[in-house]
Image (cartoon, rainbow, N blue to C red):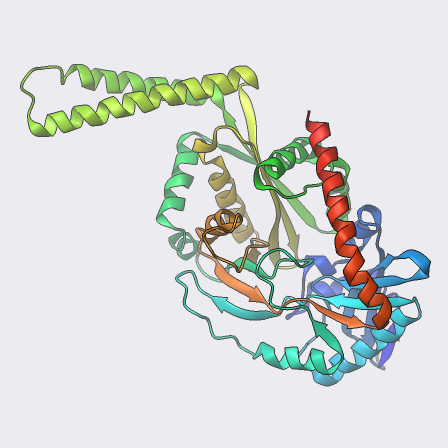
Length: 433
């Protein structure tokens, strides 16, 4: 077959978007354009064609330039190929290796979203259609070095995630939500959480929410221009939906005040002496509820006075590609947490994806280390409550083309990234002051 160094956009997109096995937004043409503008990568859209010019494999290769003319290549969640076709995989790998060597690449990194292990929402292992060990061994035979079965977020893309299979009734999807999740979604509905699709004008507020989430969850977010460019570039040919969740504090205050009046009326009716045991219990419950309502009213009044009547609390980014969707980013305010508006927003974009023909909904990242002292355990437990399958991917592989330079890169670059991370955190913190 013939190796194509720059597959024409429409042909590339048609192949990737409709590939039954390996369609992924991180292999889209738009992700290459975005990576060029915001991540300083040079995108290459390569492929293999037969005598009739039909594509049999493609890959978005992101080239990162390094000092002294060197580079490395990264194919996020790539290649787009049947990894179980050993002959095709070998031919494509060798062609890519030759292509990268011409550009002084020291290695080629891939992290295909091949499932290594999967459990359903009650922890039962799901039998996979094909044995991923076949792919694992094939890649090793081709010279790929596996970087280990990592448990946290050490890799370029998460090794673990939760995925909801949308090929079932929505009632069945809802039934898989935990009891707590259903209650919190209902709380968000009772407080009349408003959920809408955001526009480019909402990206600034979303960026602010991401900064607040960063400070709370200890991860590095991005600056406003990053999200703005993502919104503009990805929405040219595909779909990036920004879900905005907000609460009208005045409405909530009035709702709680109305309930407080009813509670006080009931308490007055229970002021007689010699109350029965059941009425004493009822009185205690009402007094506790009154106390809680007064706390809520005070909390929402303070939020209204400090911010405004209508407060945006949540901004979630959903990347849609073909019949799949990924929750790429979720930013949430650090006030009015007891409104559970975050749950309501999640519920609305799950329902939205279902109604728009999405077949696979991916929450894009969780952990494999479930020890109690893991600071990411809260994130894991939150995502787990929506009832998706717990998925573990095969992991990262590096195909090394220059061993000595690769050794230098793997030792020095982690130190460089740590320095950049600290610098980014300081800059974002300064912007928030």
